[in-house]
Length: 289
Length: 336
Image (cartoon, rainbow over all chains, first blue to last red; front, side, top):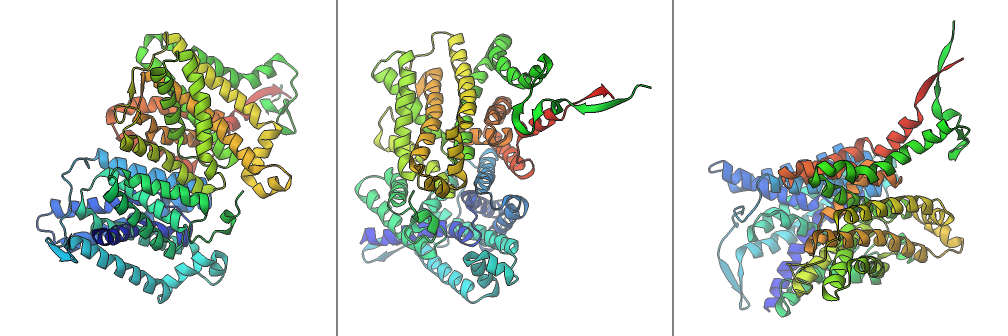
C-alpha cells in the first residue's frame, strides 16, 4: 500500500517536472535545456520575496516567482533562440549554456547549503489506508491532476491554446491560417517556464533549494520525455508513472542511490527497443538505421 | 607618375576553388604555410617559452587535453552529425582504465596509456552502439546521460575506489616527456584528422550527416560508418582521459565532470565548428582564460556560457573561419 501511494505521488512529481519541457518541445520543437535552471530560479525568486521583504504574503510571492520565470523563458526565446531556430545543434548548446549560466550564477551568488527552503502550504500528516502522508504531498497530487485538466481545457477550448496545437501539428498550415509561429513559440516558452516555476513551488517545500536539484530536474524531465516520446502528452504521463513506480520500487528494495541509475537505464533500454519513445510520433526515428 | 593599386595576395595563388593552389615562388609557399607553421612551431616552443612560469606550463597540458576533446566533438558533430554532449564520458572511461591498468595491474606508463586508449575506445563505442540509430536531440540527450550514469553507478556500487577514486597512479618520468607527449599527439591528431576527413571516407561521413538515406542507397552501411566515427572520436577522448589520469596521478569521479563536456563544446563554437583547427584555437583562448578566472570559482562557468551564447547568436562562424577570411583578404600595393 505504501508503495502504491508513494508511487502515485512520485509519478505526479515526475510528470510535473516534465510538463514544461514536453510542452515547449511539442509546440515549438525546441529542446529547452534551461528547464532545470528555470525551475530553481523560480524557487529562488519566491524565497527572495518571502525572506527579504518582511511579511510578504506567500501566495503573492508564488505568483511573482512564476511570472518572473515565465518572462525569463519568453526572453530566452525572444533574445537568443529566435536567432538560431531550426539549427538543432545550436539550439541545444545555446539553451544548455543559458541554463548552466543561470544555475552556476545562482551558485556563485550564494545559493549553497541548506538554508534555502520554502514553507509547506499546510503542515501535518494524514493517514490514508494505513499510510502516513503529509498534506503537501496530497496537495501536489491534487494540484498536479488539476493542472493537467486545465492544460487540456486550455489547449482545446481557447484561441491561443488552439493556435499552439495548430503549430504543433502542422507548422506550415498553421502559418497559412495566420498563426504567428514566433508568437506561439514565445507563448509556449513562457507557459513552459511558468510550469517549471509552478512545479518548483509545489515540489521545493519537500526539500532544499540547491543547484544540484536543477540538474536532476532537467535529467528527470528529459528521461520522462524521451521514454514517453518527445512531444507526446499521454506518453509523458505514462512514462512518469513507469519511472515513478520503478524508482519507488528500487528505493524499497535496494537503496536511494539507484534512483538516478533506474531513470538512466530506463532511457537507454527504451531507446534500444523503440527509439521514438513509447508514444512518439516522429516517423524518421522509427526507421532504424 | 607611377600608379599603384591594391592587390590581394591570394589572387595569384588560388585556382578556382578553395584548397587548390598554384604556387610559383617561395614567398607564396610561405604565405600558405605561415599560419600552419605558426601553430606547429608555436605549440612546440610553448613549453620552452614558458620555462620562466612553471605554473603556466601545466596550463599548456590542460589546454592540449581540452583541444583533443574538442577535436573529437568537432569531428563527431560537424562531420558525422552526431552531437555528443558527453565528452566527459570518453575522458572518464580513458582515465579510469589507465588508473586500473597502472595501479591494479601495475602496467608501466608507456603501456597503460596506449592500452587504456584502445580499450577505452572499444568500450565507449560498444556502449554508444545502441544509440547510433538516434539523431539530433535524442543522441545529444543520451550522450549527456552517460557520464552522469557512470558517476552514479560508481557512487552506488562503491567500486573503483568509490568517491575517493584510484590514487597512486604513476606520473610521467619528467616534465618534458609529459608536455611533449600531449603536444605532439595533439598536433598529430589534428593534421591526421584533417587528412582523414578530406579523403573519400570523410566524404561518406559528411554524407551520413547530410542525407543518410542517400548513403544507404549507395550501398554503404551507415551503422558501420557511424561506429567508425564514434571509435575515432572516443579514441581521442580516451587518450585525453588516460593522459589526465597520469598527469594528476589520480583517477576519480571528477574525470566524468561537466567541465570536460562543456569547455570543449565552447571551444569548438568559439573556434569555429567544422574546421578542426578551430577546436584547438578555441581551447587556446578559453583554457588560459579559465585559469585567469580561477579566483571567481563557479562564476567562470557563467562567463563561459555567456561567451558561448553570444558567439552562437552573433558570430556563429567562429574565430577560425573569420581569421581565415581576413587572412585571405590581405592586400599589398603593386605597380600598375
